[in-house]
Image (cartoon, one colour):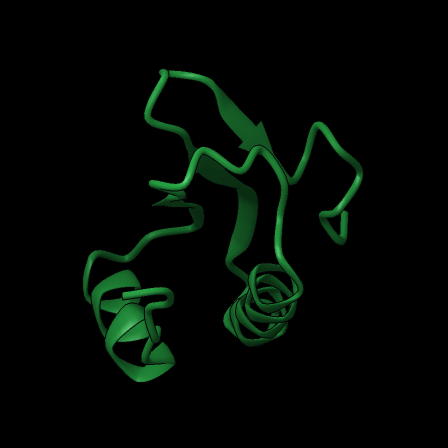
Length: 81
């Protein structure tokens, strides 16, 4: 497998049912690539836009690597606010 789909309806069903006011997204890169892909960035923007409609903040999107390191969208200036 080289990619995973995220169904925004399922994601926001959980977020709304739990009355969350903020979320942190996370996924792994088993390849060890310490960089966000174009698909990662596009998905993050879509989730941020959807969350904004519900006044929910996306605090960060983390990519977890097998060696324990991580890539933070927030730390790398890739988050909206």
